[in-house]
Length: 108
Image 1 (cartoon, rainbow, N blue to C red):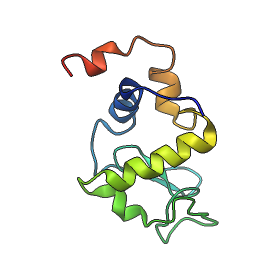
Image 2 (spheres, rainbow, N blue to C red; image 1 turned 60 degrees about the vertical axis):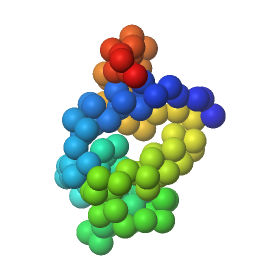
Image 3 (cartoon, helix red, strand yellow; image 1 turned 90 degrees about the vertical axis):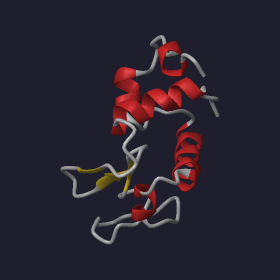
């Protein structure tokens, strides 16, 4: 499992949801992405509307839409662990991977 820095996670959240914990994006395949980390309903959570969903994090997708991101973090860490990194997130691959991420944690 490749360890990620806080800057990686902050960059991911910025470019997936603009830090919006209530973000929902519908995908062409009928699934949706939920919350600050845009966790997908086809593989990771249950929303009652995604055909063939597997609910890998064993949680209702609506739990990712509140301001308490504890459950979001737990699921995102599971996704990253299974993938051995943050590559499942398109925004991280396109906007964060291999970049100087120091600005995302400047002043922390």
